[in-house]
Image 1 (cartoon, helix red, strand yellow):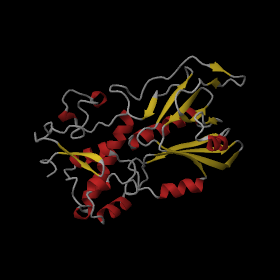
Image 2 (tube, one colour):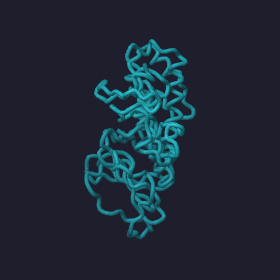
Image 3 (cartoon, one colour):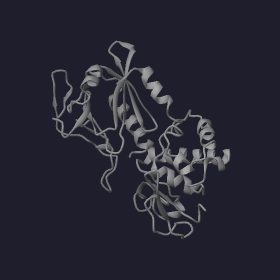
Image 4 (tube, one colour):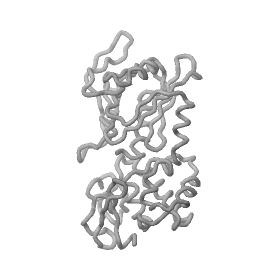
Length: 306
């Protein structure tokens, strides 16, 4: 499942490509036909993310107060793909797992036709496209999301209020995370994945932030100090910001991957414990362990996090 940094990258990209444009919104698959009809012809005024949720605010032409929100969650299988003319530079895909070596960079330019208004004419959809956004120079297709809904700003705010603070929000207050986690007897390795406790952290950021802070994933929240929890928050702020910058989750320090810059670290030199079970810890040499925790694979070093 894409973690929060990917959704923030996605929000930034959609804003850069479509903000201020009147969009043609459709549902080639048909499962979002009513929502697409309500959003069609509106102007994208804001694109943002909170945790793993993407919020696109679309206003009626000439009436910025008349706003509807397209809110989506990629889940495990969802992804956005982009294509357009040569002025429409975008990633080919953001979302569902890509092939090893494929990056969220490059141009999606393709040969296109234009309508009488000078807007690109999108290619025929491929696969089950839940929603298509078509602008002046290109289009974006959403496939396989766990959630895709059109709602009022009030409904969007109510949904967002159920989420914990987002480490990628520069104005976020970590206090709700520290308070809720510090009162729970559940393992901190579970709490970091609970989106109502803290939003946007997924399996990789969980494992890597706990390793970097030397915290046993099975430690109950009540056994951690406020300073411990604030440290985990700050660790995820830094790691997720790097993820936004790089387009990959790279959590290793330079001294633990000598001669390998962060831009070239993924996948062999990117992480300390995630997907490294059975291998020696890069810092102490102990064998990295894994176990199932609440249906997700948990990775940790028994020595560094003992």
